[in-house]
Image 1 (cartoon, rainbow, N blue to C red):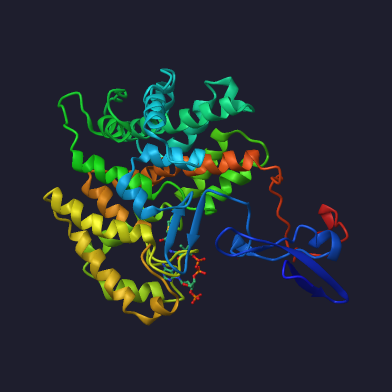
Image 2 (cartoon, protein in one colour):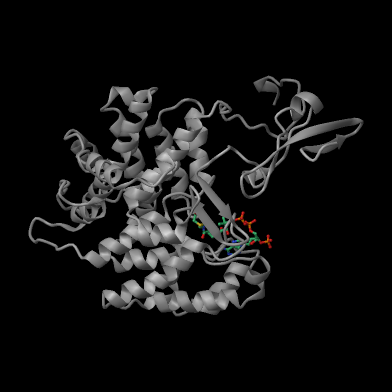
Length: 430
Ligand code: CMC
């Protein structure tokens, strides 16, 4: 048997399965013929051992705590790039040159306006609506204004859908926020750059001109880059799953937003702050009692912002954010008691054998909430900010899936453990 094959024996059947090489990282065993040739399926809840796609977008080495987009280290991108530059990289596979970047920025900045009829859409939601629900509904709704996005087929239409989503998301997010606080919607200003424009729509009020702080712009730019993509995670796999039925990019991304909202995924950033706030406010909740609860198998509480499906090392995004959190708070001359609690909680967890033995380290959500707070965002917007950052990653994956001849409609198998065949019992005999 050559090295390019893996051998699997099931009873008397011996299968030789192809090994598929990765350019870097773990190779895969091609099991596509397994069911047909050996009458078995694989059992892998959560797909922790299953490659859902061939992808050229993002590489993660969980053991080393490494993250690269299109080959570039996340740390280099976070320090040197604008969010739109990274978005271009994710979508088109290369860093744009100056001319390409300027054209891309112009293209995005001239598509920020929502159709005026979308106003009534925001008006119809109750004030207390969570902005994530509004965001995902609006993402679906935008496509209804453009017939071509219902089933884009040509590259030009797909590129235009990508541009529309990236350009309009900050407007949607800011309007969802304004709705929730009962203030008038602020229209985009195309003279501002992407991040400035978002802050303008979020914080401008009819009664006062709120200046845009360059330190806030810089910090938010870094945060968006750190969230831009992360391989085949729950929301990205959802985007691909929905898109595999040839559903359009908008509805696929809207589904991804639903997956992101959960507290075990992007919703963790809001949950981290809620957890830190409880420790701060509740005299019965201490660092020790919080750690004890997280370790207690009879309590479903988890230490929010800790652990990761892929990283068995410090999440590189958390490392960037930890130093950034201190820097941002210093530069903004503000202090946050929750940052001190976060530091103590992290130190206590890292020193605890439960977390050490399970390789549970802080993830991106542990420090992002602290920075979002310092920048003036309310907690309910945290996952929305994650979503704005993740849009390019979702779209890049949708595009890659859409152009991959190996893509098949998502249709997992199951290990059926229910009743065997039963005789039907008429209603009056039950
Ligand atoms: N607190 C306490 N125990 C934990 C935690 C935690 N945060 N995370 C994992 N464990 C334990 C878990 O109970 C299990 O213990 P045992 O071996 O005794 O049964 C062991 O560690 C392995 O856990 P797992 O559930 O198999 O790990 P997973 O890879 O399936 O889950 C996770 C990954 C992120 C869902 C989980 O670590 C978690 O729930 N973390 C808290 C939520 C969170 O911060 N999510 C943000 C993830 S990063 C942002 C993003 O989504 O991209």
